[in-house]
Amino acid sequence: MELNINSPAYYTREFGVEDEIYWFCRKLSYYVKEKNYSDVIKIIGLVPIIAPKKEIEKGLWKETKKCEIKSGFASVSLQIDYETYVESNMDEKKALIIKNVVDSVKAIKTRAKIDFKLFKEDMNKFCEENGINCI
Image (cartoon, rainbow, N blue to C red; front, side, top):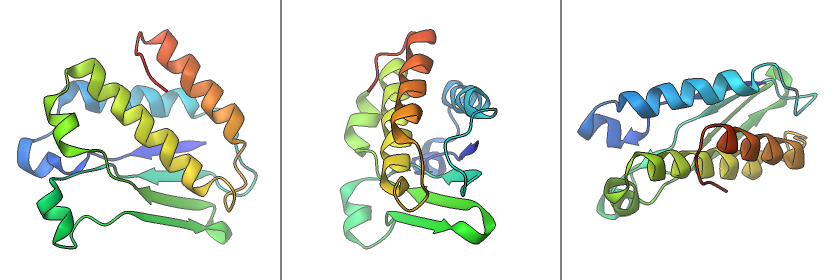
């Protein structure tokens, strides 16, 4: 499955791209590239949203979940608590990204016919292999 994890919405605009998070997401994407979790969805695009409450309360940075079965594509944008992320060290930020990825896939698992149990097992293995305390 192709997992495209984009830079966090809002946060990246304010603080720029964090190289370590960027490469971590690339490594995660590569980890699942040869795996198959669904017969109908081949690509999932993810955009974590890391924005202050005041921005979200304005109606900006809304969460979205879409599955386009005909094209084999899904896209999900879920929020990560801004204050928690900003105050976290790098390993904690990685764990928050993993949680967002898992929550995003869980949000579409039924419609996208995803083997969520297998996906979550693989995410746990990825975390163990990379020394990240997640899920």
